Length: 429
Image 1 (cartoon, rainbow, N blue to C red):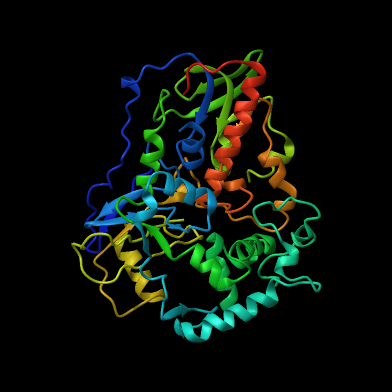
Image 2 (image 1 turned 90 degrees about the vertical axis):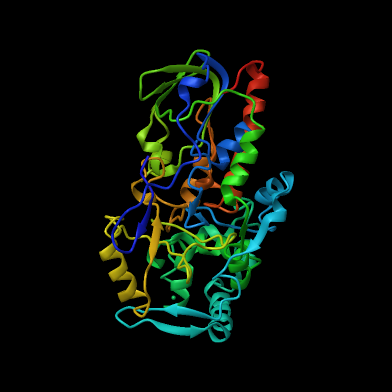
């Protein structure tokens, strides 16, 4: 695992942020064979199985605050996620997200220019007008292009004709806002990827920002949801176990771990992120089409308790890889003052380098041009008795916790059907 730092601006790093999950492998009896093995304890895996648990989401304690290091915003119009929040009574812990809920202004920096403040009263309506034009093409508006955003492959799927386009093809204020959809530059964000977000937001930019940026969980953050789901799981658990190989055998699937142990199962549910699937050997190999799909620091302020440090918290995430030395406080503070706000005193920062985390290799999924129409259906297919569940190939809220739960629920349904045809359930891992 990569470490996560609370860094003082003077350059003295404090102890790594504590993890909820400790390696407890030796304390849990593990069997040699199971009916089903689920790899990964992110929200797709937790849903399928019922430690940093939470996958690419977890809540840290920093200076008396709850900081979301990934997977922050939730909404009641994200159906799979909200059903889980309601199930565990966590919907009562929803709160507005400081800084994104009804902001008065936005900082905007065009290429080669200085940072300027843009009034929300001006940019909001202007952004909406531009969005209505950008997401309409060949006399088809966004509703005609993507009428069923939670069922994108339903025929006739007119959006597929424009999957070759990027957001940059369609155009700098609009592109800068859309770049937040996938933490990727507009030229690398597929037009239909942004169109799907727009459709999920009720064909409105205001709707997108409400559903994907206004509300979050207090009183434990997203880790509280992961813990609640895990509390209902009754099978065996092996934390810190890294999968090296999955092979189909006569009676199911044999799994080999990096430390040389082998497990057998009637079926396997893999929630390994798309960026990491290439690190696992599959026998027989995955389809060439699926393999072609294998081809950064993220934090947030929860604000549920009084801060030990007073002042303003800045939420940031990026896509370039320039944060190579996250303990180099002098460089980070210098760049913050140069690029964002020169007249401030930076007291501390917290970061997680998702790009160099070997179990994530990036943040949430953002597909480029010629991706969804080519790879989505293939990524959702099982590979024999190996099923794949993950937010990276969800139908609706792809890259979100809602999308992870969606695919976890599909994996449950398909795995149960597979076991009904071949076996009875005994032990779970």
